[in-house]
Image 1: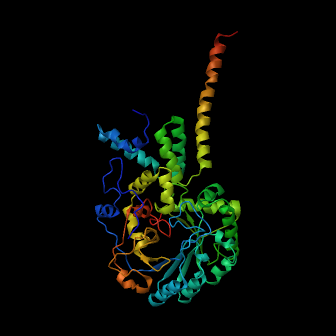
Image 2 (image 1 turned 120 degrees about the vertical axis):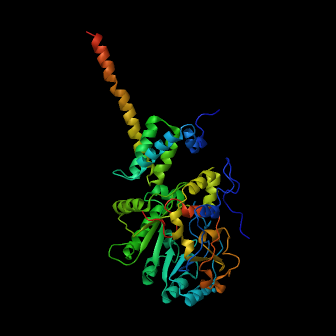
Image 3 (image 1 turned 90 degrees about the vertical axis):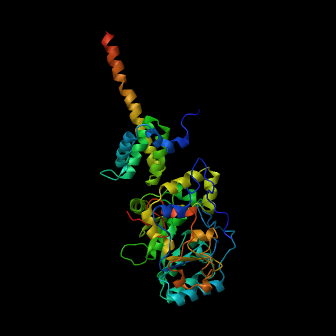
Length: 337
Length: 109
């Protein structure tokens, strides 16, 4: 059963009951949310992380014990072998802390998949992880790393004291390995999340700021910056409630609904797998335990992608986080500016 | 009745209740002013924040603080904008000291 949906169910201040109903909003625009072909298999290998960021929708941290087993990792690779997904997107927690992480990367690359790793930068300084830049390079992994701002104060406020300086050192090491530097094919993309209860700026505008400031202040470079909206789930939802910002933030998301973002939503070409091998329409639904539509297979070992093409995507009020403004996905803004 | 309720900002359109035609004209102009043009949205948001402080309008300060964050500005930049507004207000008061000098000089030997 899904957990209690962590956004307002009974709006206050006279808002109509359907105000936060995502499907009704789509219907009002003559739309419904159905998936296309599955191109990306996004694998969340568990909630273990060396950081405990304040906005984390996974509620990941050093004390978490939910970690994908080797057996499940092998089921993931078997599905990748059978169905030849174009992209394997590995996330967590800090996925590198999973004992099967390097197996997943190596096996997926051997199958010809494009492998992306959601790498938090600081995990590079954990025991046994100092060769990560070389490992990424050896397997031509696309690295996607969170850096909420180009200044220390904002970054540490969201991700913990000392994270900014460590992140800069990690970026230097990635640059030294050929990642994110001009003329290289090794891709290093950064992710901007707002440090608080507000929407991200225009992606192209803030990317230019990041590039200028990071090269001028720290002599580090990267390829693209993705802006991602904070989702009202788990730790960020706790923050919204604790600070009295929940309703205001939800209204902001609903009022910024952009129908042009729907076509490019990540759930339309992605299947998400959790640490136990269960299937979801996206990583956010995964954290809400809102599985794929009940008539579909529920686990990676049963997955047949053709059955998932055209499926009805499971939605909730949190989906307004992906359709606000320029939209938001694991690849940043959906509506390019 | 309390003055300056936070929720009143959301009720702004109610101001148009008795002359919606005038309010619609105002809103069309207001929204056109915010768009990217020769100045970027971010620059305009910082100008808005500065003017909001000069006017000391709590609704505008709230709205343009959020607009600045959502345009990618940081507190250092926003604080400089607020100082610009304050400096102008201070300077505008101070320059009137010349009026005082003129007044005093007119009647002094």
